[in-house]
Image (cartoon, rainbow, N blue to C red):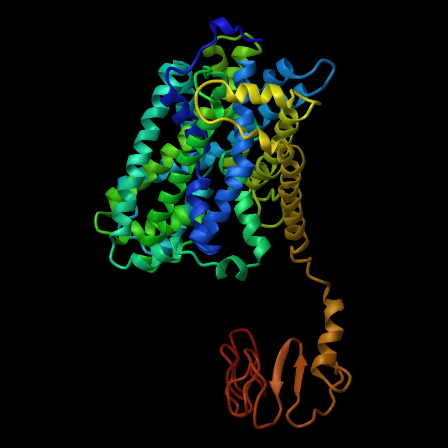
Length: 557
């Protein structure tokens, strides 16, 4: 295990706040939070979201910080150091380490998209493209293995290069620069967006309280959306935050610091919405969520905006900073394991993890092209979806449940030790009167999030379209639906009634009648391709009676 006396520490309180906020503020703040906020009631949804942010995610984050600061080591060693003798809590520490690695297996690929689109936007490659061409451009980047692997590798090299410099000189200094730039850029972009002509309806859609939208999609659906976003936004449960608690001194209480980080995360998410919705409404573009919003919708907005190259480039710098601060923070978790547990030097730990991550992240980068046929979660899914589900819907909720039980019950570290660590230093104290809530209610909420995620996956897989039935299985009911009499085989023609349709070798012919069925020509009109009409005019490529046949075929006598 690590030697506390020689272990590195963060250089300042500001460094701790910005590095921790950088870990929390990620792509979900930009491509998911604004969308679900607008969809589920604007400011009305934000109120529900804030409730769960305070009573669901914040306590788990404080618990992570407390375990880290008390143990003075990474997630893999922290449980081993603090758990009661004879218990197996330390096993989860290694699952938490795996969760950090699994997160980076797909997050590095998506972060590479941000760097790539900054380059594409700044170099003017979207100028003059139509909306369809911009959509096709994104599709082409996904289909190129070299492009995907190249940008993913660049993200990994940048992240581990920062970690190799050191904790204070690398991770803290670079993250402070990126986070400062992130907040400045998003404020500038928001000011530009809200001052666009026609931006008013977007602002109203995003922030005006509309409680009817909380219920129009189903009240439980809205509540679960708020619960899920609050739970996942701070990335708690796999020890990503724990490592920065281990680098912190005991001058400030962890509850107060946790509230500050939560506010920074919320500010970034709200400001991202003020960039996206006013701009989309101003240019009559339908806002969406996920990659389509970032890589198709918004580039279309910037193409049509005055100074669009500048503002588009700033937006993708903002996105790149949000992604890279998370990458650097999680990479530091992986590097710290080599230093604390394996007694490696920082340089060696960086080198080993860099090579491992290049290998582990490659399947996700290739999942959109060479491995596209591998659809692990049903038709249309890719490797990224599987890795994201493992982290977001499995390890984060189960890990959070472990932290809650470990810190609030006598079976783990214990309530009194946790509170003593959380309250050490100046600042806001942990609300001890909520102990029954943390012991009995919070675990149930986390389990609801966990099982709902798996239930939604089950519904998705169950709703997948079944394989098409054999021809024989569908022929009979179709014939019964069309004909009142038994089906007539082509070799045994019977006299059809007036106005009836006859199916002969998948060709439809109207015998006589005033009105034809849909898709069947009436008397005198051109018949189905390959069948001559009653007036003798043939369909395209089929000679009328008495005309010359195609080359190599005899004409009708």
